[in-house]
Image 1 (tube, helix red, strand yellow):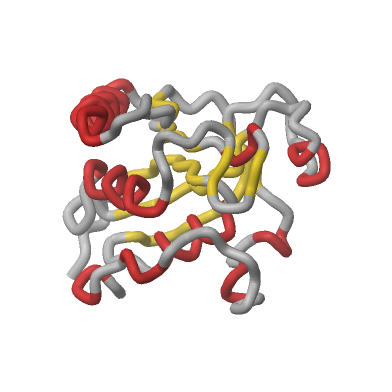
Image 2 (cartoon, helix red, strand yellow):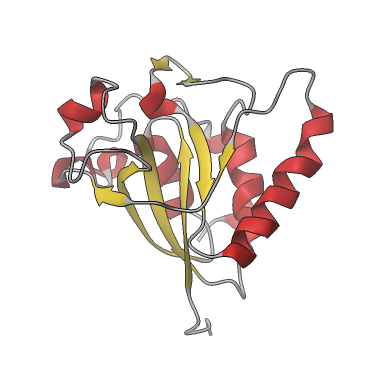
Length: 170
């Protein structure tokens, strides 16, 4: 039986199609929603975000059960599927909308995530460029971008789904 106590976190790991699908498969994830975070334009369109003029990151809201999946576990999963030293680029995707980040909505979660990222820095020879900051805003992506890889199983994706361990899958 799962807890009725759920939490949310917004994560960015390059193109949101793969990030959403990766997390959707994890035990403890209740819901996912692709969208745009941390930008300067209200309710941007996908096309506006792609110009790089809105300063949004492609991101995913994760609703999760912390009794099954901790916030640190979520951060660890992000680090599995990104190059945390790559600024504004993941896989073949280049642009500020493909930056990586962890965006909590409370200061307690912010501290957990800052400590997690700080603990990872020594594992890399280059600077870790994952943003860790309070969530400022989030706008839903278009409907056809929600669960994109479920609807388009052969769509492009930079995420390596083999990083999911069998015991972590729903």
